[in-house]
Image 1 (cartoon, rainbow, N blue to C red):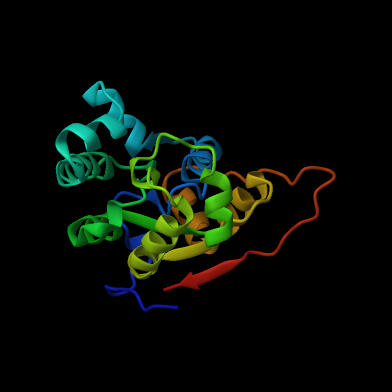
Image 2: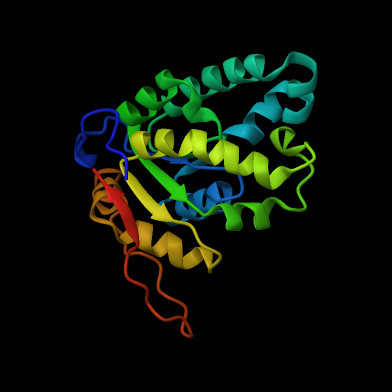
Length: 214
């Protein structure tokens, strides 16, 4: 596992007490983010959806008309704005980590959680999605592998915590995240010391699968 690109920062010292989710497309950042926000009583933002709402067009259209570089500039400006808001849960776009300043900014402003998944799982989850401009070539799986190879060190370096996002009940993953001491600390500081949501009656409790904790 790659070392963090900047010094570890205790959760209690993070100024805004926000949670920022990073990771590849299809790993469940939006789903997990909404559930975390509901459990914590916080505002949730999906950076991609927010960008589309403000632009009035889809991300695919922005890529087609303005190009990826212009999209990344828009993305960085929006990340700067949203991450500055205290006490939020923010799901970032898959390529947000490509700009070092984005990574530094997220780490300074909140707890960064990397939702990690395998090539096979990402390919399965995105197989029928025709809205992702980076997967519109002849071989989407090969493109995912290329992106994963490029971005994995960036995700690992930017994250305070890494959780495996497998093809399981997302509620269980949310419970594991909420029970981590660093997230618990944020909940208390934010004035939401309530307990984590209970496990469903037919569900078997799963131990935290934290892959990296710097």
